[in-house]
Image (cartoon, rainbow, N blue to C red; front, side, top):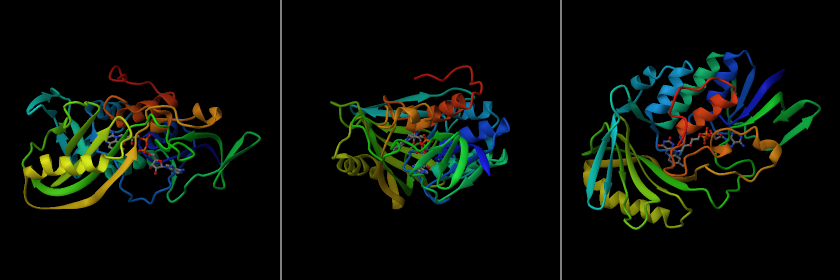
Amino acid sequence: MIYDYIIVGGGIAGSVCAYELGKKGKRCLILERNSRQAEKVCGGGVSYKALRMLKEIGIAAEPLFLMNARQVGGHVIYEDGGCTEKLYGEGRVSLGIQRTLLDQYLLCAAAHVHAQIQFGQRAAMVTKSGELYEVNGFLARELVWASGARGISGEIPKEQSIGLSGQIAANVNLAEDRFHYWYFDAADHEKYFWAFPIGGHLWNVGVWNRHFDRKLKNDYQYCLEAFFLHKVSGKWEYVRKPRAEFLGHCDQRRPDSYRKNGIGDFAGTCNPVNGGGIHYAIRSAIAYAGAEGGADGYSY
Ligand SMILES: Cc1cc2nc3c(=O)[nH]c(=O)nc-3n(C[C@H](O)[C@H](O)[C@H](O)COP(=O)(O)OP(=O)(O)OC[C@H]3O[C@@H](n4cnc5c(N)ncnc54)[C@H](O)[C@@H]3O)c2cc1C
């Protein structure tokens, strides 16, 4: 079997790319290193722009609203002892969701247009003989890297930002239809704490820092105790323990020949100002597959 495309990575960018190529009749194979159920280190905040873009290419957002997720209509920013709220406006519903659910939904969309998905397949070495790429014994005419911020070698350029998040089950005295951001260091607005409702009694809680910082865990613990746990009534527990990961918003260390075939965080599309990346991963996948994008919302 020779595929038209092997896509390395079954996250946001990889699935959307396979979906777009599949619609054009291309035979795609997604290689995903994780098992089917692996939960990502991600806040799970999906903006209305991202949902709108999915809808424009034919991936309905409505089923996502029916999953264990939260519809979010605005955000609250806490800083300098006060807070300001922004409402997104009519028809601009965002979503807080566990990333596993979102990724599975997008992989299903890709499978619907006949993409094949192999879990537990970490792509390590790529060879090219003649016109064909070979990855883990699979052959294709084209290769797309959608493997996230770590690039091919797993090394991280110093410029990348970093986030750390966990999922907590609790009753929380915060509006459940808002994303909550706390700028906990008045002297440094290049880091913040967040609490996102992601369905049921689940919250994604984390910190983002524009610069690599070994004190990230301490910041997280400080914010958890100083902000979040004050709002919790009754018992709480981790559904996913806190983990850290880099975000892809600058060029990775990789051979030039691979660079043009990268999408999503691999290609550095994540927003360096706030760390949001889902919307841009979708956008870059659509652009790669040559589809028409939406009318607006495609730039920072
Ligand atoms: C802590 C944190 C919180 C975040 N919160 C948000 C948020 O709330 N909203 C938002 O919009 N963005 C958020 N982001 C950014 C967002 O997660 C990324 O921008 C987005 O996931 C990028 O999508 P992607 O498809 O490029 O990469 P990913 O979603 O990372 O997908 C890459 C896939 O490739 C697989 N893979 C990696 N290497 C290999 C390999 N060698 N072989 C096979 N498979 C491989 C991985 O397992 C993964 O499934 C957050 C990031 C972090 C770290």
